[in-house]
Length: 348
Image: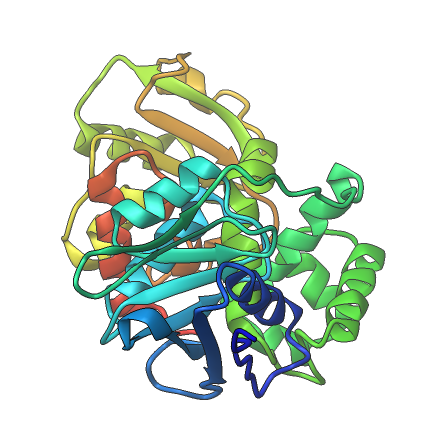
């Protein structure tokens, strides 16, 4: 009788880990599977996966990053950036990895396994160990869009300003730009899920993954006022004009324009600004015309947290990083990693 693979985990309650290990277990009776959690480890990983290939008398080890949210390109790019700092080959465990995102991970040398059975693992010698794709996930119905947006705005605020969890509810709601009832409901939900505790964040990485996954598909489309092309094409002159046009209202540079002021690494040609309210005559003063490919992006971003930057009129570093890691510009995504290393505390 074939020897059954061994399945070990110190966190048996983690359904994502357990399900991904089970999918590996189903691949072949000749592969032994072990997992050891690395809670509190300084490796930035959640655990170590060991695969023993009986017929080759060989052992392969991978450091595991776990996400409990479906992968977006922004979240995948963040995982790739973190994987580059790991001391050995890594693999992502996720609820579901769509084909294009799976290919993006594998092209960057990061393996993946998802709950529905898609996987890609490479040995450290470069040989293909296993590749399965094309299995589809059945997603649970999502709450109405407004509720989702409020939830993610709250998550952003408490990630950016964890001290808010010790503040009165009205302060939390104002920071997130949502109502008190919505803030109270979402805080209760996060507490019940074990993500936050009394006055502190318990699972910061989980919260960050939720935020990065939701930003390009839920949050940014809701905030987007539009993209524009201005008569003047010089980013430096456009920035001065923006400062003049919005001088009486709340606003902040985001993405590359903000990051360049913080570390002089890379700016890019696009200019992103976050504004506290929909423009009135500001765009006219800029001579800005709507253009879906224009270099100026205006985001109407509620709350106060977004504007708590390193300097006046710079967005919060987490928001700057999120916009950059979601960009189609590969150099801007690379610059996001530099910004994260310099200005953001590593999540636990």
